[in-house]
Amino acid sequence: MAQRYFITSTGTGIGKTYVTAALIRQAKALGLTVAATKPVISGFDKREIAASDTGAILAALGEDLSPENVEKISPWRFAAPLAPSLAARAEGRSLDCAALFAQGRAFLRQDADLLLIEGVGGVMVPLDANNTVLDWVVALGAPTVLVVGDYLGTISHTLTAVEVLRMRGVELAAIVVSQGLANEPFSYAPSEIAHRIAPLPVLRLPYAAQGESLAGLVRNKG
Ligand SMILES: Nc1ncnc2c1ncn2[C@@H]1O[C@H](COP(=O)(O)OP(=O)(O)OP(=O)(O)O)[C@@H](O)[C@H]1O
Ligand SMILES: [Mg+2]
Image (cartoon, rainbow, N blue to C red; front, side, top):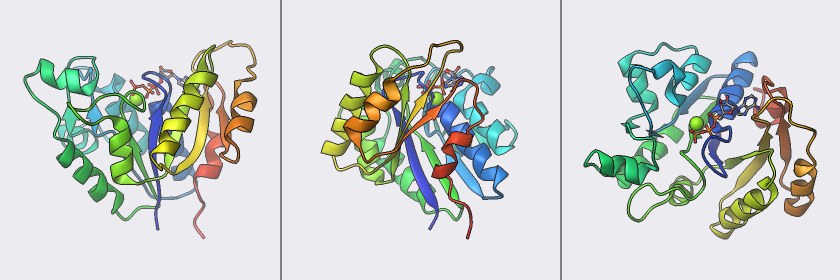
C-alpha cells in the first residue's frame, strides 16, 4: 500500500509546505512515484501562483503551473489570507467539508508510492461553521506528520497539538521540527519534546535542509 501522510502543524507559516516539498524531493530521488495535494488554500493570488503553496508543490513534483494543475492540487482556493471559514465567507461562499473529505479519500486511493496531503493553518483552524482541520484529519484516517517550529513557545504548542490529536485517535507518524529562520541558535526543543511524547519520532529539519533527515518517512521500494 502507498505510504500516506496528512501534513499538519501547530499553526500557519510553520513549515508544512517546506516539509511536503522536501518529502516529494526525497521520494523522487529514490525513484518513487508521488502525488500531493493542498486541497484548501487561502490568501491565493492567481497572479502569484509560483509563490503559493500550490506552486511550490507543483514545482517539487516537476509539474507546470497550468490552470488544470492548479485546480488538481488545490481545488478550494480563496483570496483572503484568513482561516478558510472566514476566507470563504469573505467571498460569500462556504467550504463544503463533505466534498473536501470525499476529495481526500479519493486522493488517498490513488496508485502511487507516496501520497501527501498538506492541511491548512494549524491543527484546529476552522474550515466551516462546525469542522476544523482536526475533523478533516480524523475523517481521512491517514497517518499524520505534525510540523512544528523551533522558537520560544514551541514546546507548549507542540505538546498541546499532540494531546488533541491523540485524544481524537489520530495516528501520528512523526513530529518534524522545522527551523524556519536562519541563524537561530541551537535549540533544545526537539529533545524536550521527544522524551515527553515518546515513542513518537521527532525529526529535525535544519534551515534550508533538503530533507535528508526525513528520509525515514519515505520508504524505499522493496
Ligand atoms: N527548514 C526550513 N528551512 C528554510 N526555510 C524554512 C524551513 N521551514 C520553513 N521554512 C520557511 O518558512 C516559511 C513558512 O513555511 P511554509 O510555507 O512551509 O509554512 P506552512 O506551514 O506551509 O504555512 P501555511 O499555513 O501558509 O500553509 C516559508 O518561507 C518556508 O520556506
Ligand atoms: Mg503551506
